[in-house]
Image 1: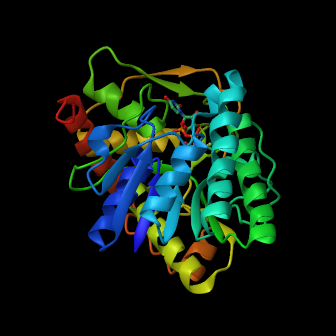
Image 2 (image 1 turned 180 degrees about the vertical axis):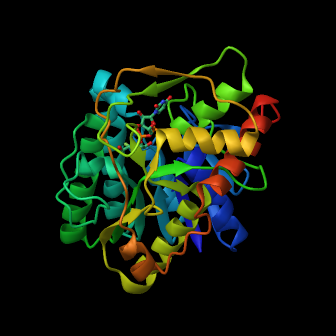
Length: 328
Ligand code: UFG
């Protein structure tokens, strides 16, 4: 299969490219490198380009003539989306619209997109099913929901087949150390905890210990990035075989608190985590855990990394590699 991957130089994108290439697919990465890294484009051809650049994108789709597209390219920080909503609507809404318009004009084919648990906002039920009413509480979540609405309209009007994969908390790294999480600045919990043990003078900020949870800290569902990668390939196959568009949660279904992440990092690394308790971070839901039955049933998805230790171990190995600047 020929697959065009927007945002293939990023965290989840690069792991998905590796998975696709290892499974006999021809990959072309389309990325503007605004947050991604050229060093992580190791599996397939690379085209430098922005998803909002319609003529460039159209030319690439025309030339590559992919059997399917996986669309990762987007802005991903909740906090930044509150401060600078315009760039989120530009990148995530307008950029996604451009892809749909190019497919409409160049010939529709399956489109798998990065959705997010952020569409649920503060869900009434946990674990959260796809049937939960989406009520995003920040611009980032709203852009991801608008993208899904646009997909529904394009499916109806132009028969564009799509799957939106709503990730919970992506974590971990390629066990072979060829790619991993590399955000600048880093805002996510696990890499920040690892930095606090790896770097002198780096203290982790714990955002809130007064939530109504088992230990007062927020609960999340961490899913290994390689398991997300396989889900994208399965979603593409599903669309090619069944042609039925839908949104699907991806998580492990286990709720893990911030304090539990800290103690697991201490166990995996054998080092003490230095942390200070800070105020709550605005917009953080107290608990987000996925019901991923739909992914298992529809896609036959079987996550391979179910323990948080195994996820953190791969992130720790990658962190050491990045710290040694092996990638730079
Ligand atoms: N946290 C800290 N200290 C840090 C970083 C995070 O205490 O330095 C806490 C957060 O407050 C939160 C938990 O750790 O309670 C997880 O935070 P992350 O930033 O790692 O992840 P989020 O749950 O905020 O974000 C994830 C995805 C987003 C998505 C969001 C939906 O990364 O893309 O879930 O809520 F929008």
